[in-house]
Image 1 (cartoon, rainbow, N blue to C red):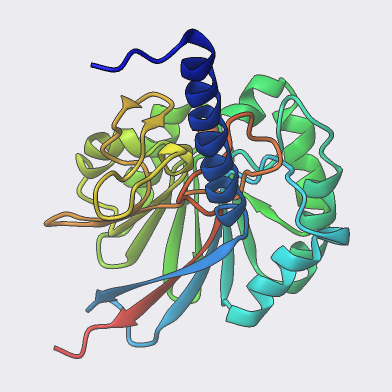
Image 2 (image 1 turned 180 degrees about the vertical axis):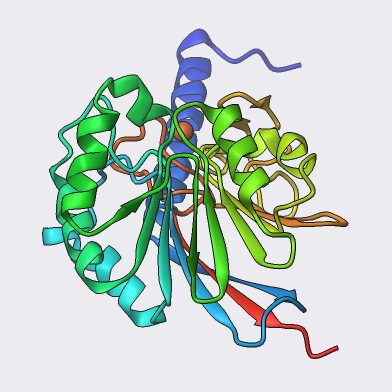
Length: 272
Ligand SMILES: [Fe+2]
């Protein structure tokens, strides 16, 4: 058997490391652009369709000068309503990108915003919420709001109490959409039997994916191999859509096969 001299072994290890680093860089660069992802949910509770654009986990990341690419991506889909499912403002970076974004969409679309954990951690949720309202955004904090024939139910700072209140006030005859940041609490949301559609975020797609094999490596509150990292989850009584979020320039570890996403949901009357 041939024994490689130590210097040769070192060169092989260095070359392998360089190839791996190159592959990692290429994959993370390919995972950087934003994608628009579409879902259709059918219901017999509506006579006319509604299109929702969901923006989640923006973390004040940069999307071009004046947030042009994100605004244009939303404009291209012509949504009826825009929902913001938390971690839009961030607790550890300058929030000017978020402000530029909210200022524009607040003028263009009916927008509804619920808090995420990073707004809470900032200790500035009250001032963020007031600022968002000054841009024309509706902040829902344990409140329901009717728009385009559907009811938007907004989880709030007092998470469980706010969701209980929303469920109590929601009319079962309406198509009720719960905006709630944390997908891992799906069984709690379902326990009320009131929410037809749940829109969440928080998991950032599990950061690394292998399409068709692994839907996310790690997510906060869920740990390794998270069940609800991103995508669509169908239940007997409801559907949950988990946005993989729009955070990218703030990520310490790059995303792999997990492009930031703008989520578009069409709620369509069931022909049957
Ligand atoms: Fe979060």
